[in-house]
Image 1 (cartoon, rainbow, N blue to C red):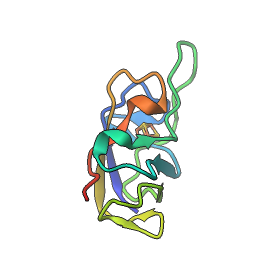
Image 2: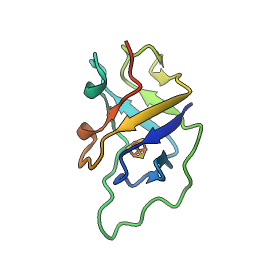
Image 3: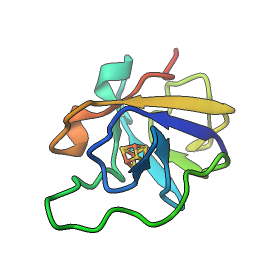
Length: 102
Ligand code: SF4
């Protein structure tokens, strides 16, 4: 579980650079570097769509397929906090986990 700082401010789940999703999934099974990862939970906030009413969490469970990352333990993220980047993303592929380390 980790606190998520997220610059993807146009994500449905983003509030004040925090994440309100109950859980997220980071993808990147073959990733050797940060830019090959992505937040699969991203949903683009469209005009007229009500944004998440929840508050950002500081202990979000993270499933993570980036098994080459040092923080990955059996497809779970064990980092205490992570940074997701992807300003103005339109799809998950335009986001990435900047905390990824090999
Ligand atoms: S992009 Fe992912 S980490 Fe960022 S707010 Fe959306 S669901 Fe949360």
